[in-house]
Length: 302
Image (cartoon, rainbow, N blue to C red; front, side):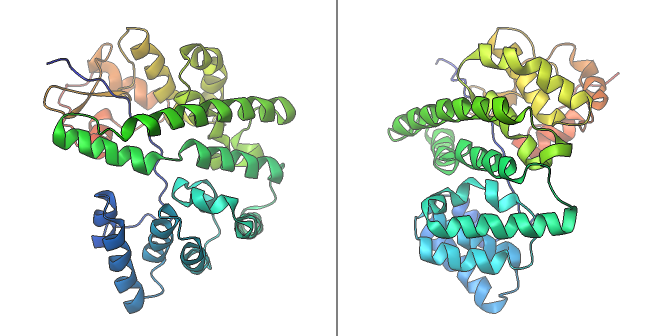
């Protein structure tokens, strides 16, 4: 049987670092109605559980039940001063509603009150919207991945979603280049860590390898100067190597083996991978792989 190679480049937003509960498990299985019921049961017992309330809002948003989603989202964000929600793809359905602009403004105001004024707040909002749009349809693609791992073949509904994902990516890339031309390359010090990662995600997801190769020096420079994500730099560097038939350096790219389990693509001098990872501030590969794909890495390091 031909080995199926699939890239899964994911950015997982966790607003409050929550522990998985029954609702989370049901949601991950695609059982959204049951997940909502489980979240609401917890909410009725403990309405101050921000983790649960936020996830309840997300579940409603995925179902395009906007009124309920906005209701619980406002409750969840009442005491939150971060910008995470503004980039969370689960909430993408809400962005076409006029109430979303109010969410953006209130979170931006609270964030700046706590962390100081941003140099280009409007640029920040535009970059966060790109992140959210870039991750749109990821829940549906996760369901396709689950189906593949169980049945050994992609579901028929995967193909139109994958095509839509490509079209979104192309549009996002064009918008990203326009924003960078107008505002300059986003850095941690100018737009904050979350917004600064926006171009890296979009570049990583672009279907044209030449795009990643073009921007790699800028991405590496930002990593070295601590003005950009070294994690995303490692992903992009490894993806270029894997896609051009070479061994990866950091172990960030995965494939399915014949048992439909994820494993890392071959790594250049694997006994030195942790040394390379440490140089850019990444955790040991053994820990990363266990957490990300439940893979046991046993290569002795030098």
